[in-house]
Length: 392
Image (cartoon, rainbow, N blue to C red; front, side, top):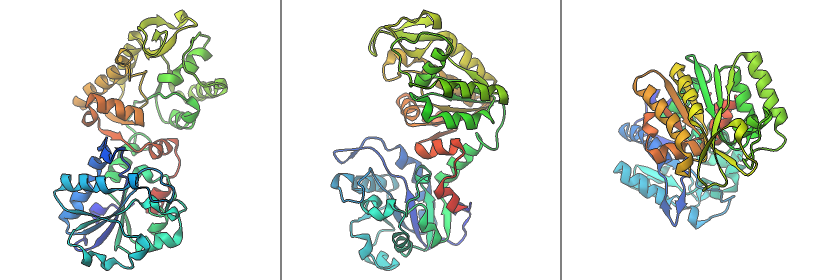
């Protein structure tokens, strides 16, 4: 994979830059700019090298139709403020832009084409559409790792028509993920949560062959607790998951990867109820598990202390209620403590995990925090991502 950082001749080149600027919008206002902030280094790098930039991106799922509320206008304005450089949104129909000389019409060095998903051809990975996009630039740069699991025209087919490179943020993402999948420093531990074990079964199976420890927390831990003969009351669980749990336990024994699950938990009658710490054999039928207990936190902290690499995907409990956020907070604190001592390499990812770390304002205290969502999970499963494969 060639990085744009290594390309020597960039001055005056027209760069087609694919970004993921799919940020949450409400009434034309950006609610979370994390994804925008992450790609600023690539834009600054290209500006410093005197390039002309054409941004390709999307917001939401317009399904090939123009939807005013999903315009990239507020995102362009946000970029302009942060870069201190004019960013021009081109609202003209892409098919009416006939060649790469359209920079002559504008004084700005950064042009942004309107939401690429306003065109149905984008998600269809249409070859002619990709070729037309490619005709607008000299070089293609993919800095949208979080979209790279999609076979879309501006991610996949476009690379057939231009010299293609990875962006700085995509390089960081791949390097971080390689350190937890390929270039591993052991012992390595995964803390994994979520409500449905079936959505993470392939990730767990793939990681078991490489990891020393896998700690199951959150809603999916309830399936393990019940499988091992305990009552979980009204706790969320996934139906018909016994075979999946059995597969995980059997594979872990074969691969000598230790599987951990909570030894004590916090329960309540409902999501806003008063927390009670209980052993697994003490849970009543009208109670629900909402967080891990102090003994489990201590055990997890001990494992983190002995680990040199850690992957965290999924909070330990119902962290939206402060009464049930302690497990997740203590895990974050322990990882950060080891990070500050340079004793561990830490990667966190997944929507809820990122939300938790943002709420604690500790994203910068991890070695890498991925906002890539589906691409992050598919990479951990060992799947090939079309956008990355094309770069290779």
